[in-house]
Image (tube, rainbow, N blue to C red; front, side, top):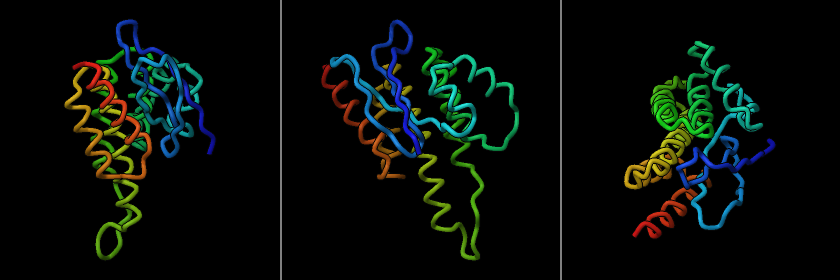
Length: 180
């Protein structure tokens, strides 16, 4: 799986920087040393993720928004969340991120005779963690550091293997210290 990271300012008035990474892999991107850099996850192989990674946010938003299928709703909403964030449309990003959290929580899973299989539960937990982490980035960008912390903590509880969540928590602590 290839990883491509992009680092840019979100809007003119917002200092934190978001980095795009694949949903299952994240890599650091460096920019100005005095700014918090949060990581967001995008599905590169679905819902126009390659357009997002290429910096074509408006095109991705148009394409994703014109599709109205419930199939891959979580991936669509996740990528829409990131595209809106990267294009500086924070209110729309916030709505899309919230919808991604809901879509991840209600995902259908393969069931065994004893209920949901362990692998399906792990996958769902990982997807919910990705959505919570992305929403945490939006909260951090808006300056709601307490809500961001709650989202990152919840994401970490669901999937401790996501390095982006740990990185976001570290960056949040730096931002909190800087604001004191």
